[in-house]
Length: 247
Image (spheres, rainbow, N blue to C red):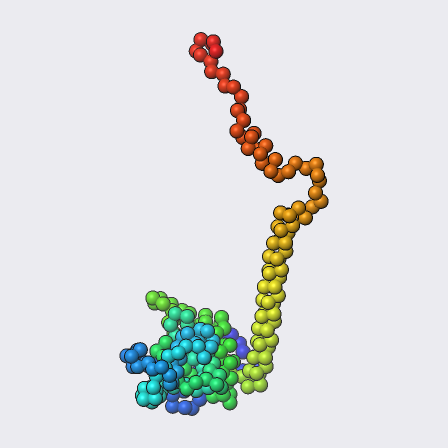
């Protein structure tokens, strides 16, 4: 493991999770959450589509209160961390304060952190980092598709530092992401301007505005006619000689 800054330490998940009974929980078995249990409205079902889009409001799958109470161990609350387990693995969604009550589906793990010592967004930034991906990549390979599971997540190391340092790191990350967004917008605008300039040049070229016109220049229509005529013109008389040398 790499050396950490002074005052930091490596921790296990059970050191940074909350003390709730179901602070760390994988989604229910598929048989416990079939589509036949879905209703028009009620308690939201959170799945990979929300995590991959980083949008807790996306989707419209719900269960009624009876099913919600039956699967209460998989229930989520604001600031819980949801992790994608299959296919697009390792993506993280931090549920906002306004998140609807609901449960996770079988393709997710939910983690309730001890927010007094570990920021949810700090966990997300670390979990989605290339460094951590390299640690669980070997275990997730060798199957038909990439897979994470709860045991792997619990075995991973997590850097532990003060909340003040976590907040400062998140502030720097946000600033860098904002700069990247501005750069992306600048590049997009420059490409749009380049395309507009190209169209303007072509328009001027086809309307005799690109260079000064010489009235003595041969018109394009006459040039084309001359080219066609030259192609159709005979290439000279062919002389065929007989074997005796007479033509």
